[in-house]
Length: 60
Image (cartoon, rainbow, N blue to C red; front, side, top):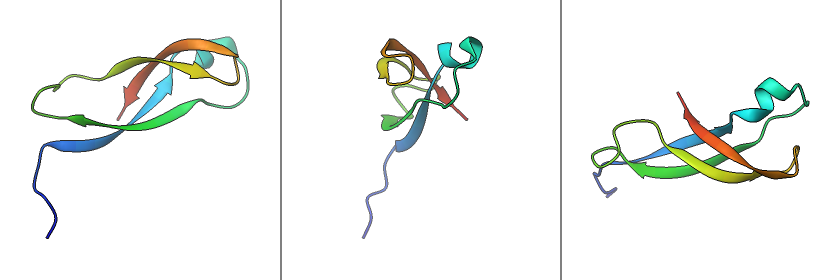
C-alpha cells in the first residue's frame, strides 16, 4: 500500500533564461512537503544553457 503523506513532486524552472532569450529551458524535479512549505519553492541550481548557477522557481 502506498503511503499517504504531504509530499508532492514539483518542477523547478529557471527564471533568468526566459528573459535572456537563450533557447532551451533548464528544469529540475524535486519533492516538497505541502504542509511545511505551502508557498512556491525557490532554489539556486545550475543552468547548463547559461553555464552558471541561477534561481529556479516552482511552476504550476
